[in-house]
Image 1 (cartoon, rainbow, N blue to C red):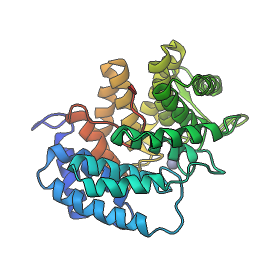
Image 2 (cartoon, helix red, strand yellow):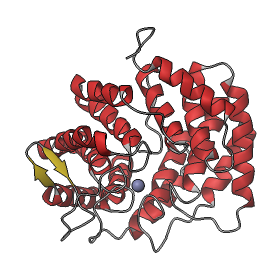
Image 3 (cartoon, rainbow, N blue to C red):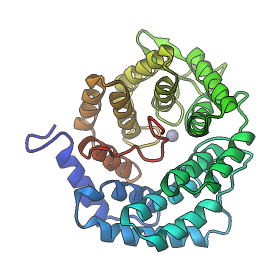
Length: 330
Ligand SMILES: [Zn+2]
């Protein structure tokens, strides 16, 4: 987008500097840490800052008397970022602390969702297994999967069945567990059935019986689409791709009326469009992501780290989406 460099280049460097200078360790140390680790190939100042931010984040987690499971409002997101930091820095001491914290995340919760509950913990222990190869994390993921209540509920990724299904699908792909695969597919079908169509765009209300689309990643198209595109890659079922494409159309149409935040704003939408571009090879999704970024006002504090991570994905080959299961789990 910028005449001086590759798409997103200038904004990425400005964003990294903003994170370095305004390193907000109190409110968002986990998300800042995640973004800085992702951007490490980009800036030589980053390893030292990552080390500082990781130590702060680890100490903060170790002090916590009540560990909550959620990926976004619990400890899981911070542990995920610490695992990534320890791997990127090749720091065995930090890795030991991150692993210990990962073993302390409660796996069973009265809340089954990603943001606050056990699906977030499940995704995190699968990530811990990917980073460390330690089989105890697969055992914990199995326990989490056994307790997932998938009967019905809200649709969205953050607080509903799209996120729960994403965990079950990731677990099924890793372990070849048939029952979890069936459950995940059943939820993918329920999400396709629950889509509200507006010509070529698909949106989701909070749950069955509701009629107002929620907007955003946590409850609507960007999150549901993020799961459905993974379900399409895992199963080859074209219905999932079609609905994920329609979710991308909704995200593109709605960007003009959305906040710049990450959770239910424009920034997480960009990540979804990059998922679609990567999964389908359809360059339109990447163009839409670039257009969105090109017209984006500076995001708020919570959105900036996610935007930096998204821009890293555009310019650093092999960079992954933060706090999401991989598109093609091995
Ligand atoms: Zn939200």
